[in-house]
Length: 182
Image (cartoon, rainbow, N blue to C red; front, side, top):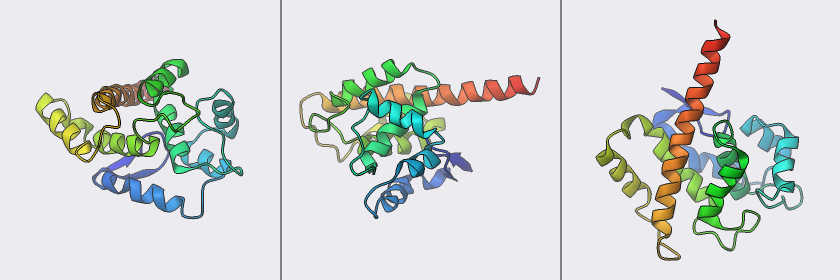
């Protein structure tokens, strides 16, 4: 079944969600992405990404190239922006990683958080059962080592919020399409 990778316009088979990290990593072998590539993957206008940088939602690109971590931060914001105000999204990201324009205070790398989320989102239809949710979260975080006490719990809470926000965003888009058909 075809599935849109969260925060992007890219479609893959839902069963291939575990390969998203490898796919994205290969896009950065040349040393980063220019703004037009980021815009192409996200469906965002370039000025939107530039605005998010100016507002401190992510660190500025170096030599006009965005890193995988920066792209993943953009994807987090993009996938939630239809259902949450930007300030709330940033509060969620700060809850996990402190200052948004710095990476030295992060309890988890933005890319690692994004790929954890993708693996969970691909299984979202199965997560209505609390036991399945706990098992999926345990599998997703099995190799995570807390840099500070309580970090894992914070990540779990954030992932739950992100998953619900992602599902809500899909529902909003479905409702809008249905309205357009009236």
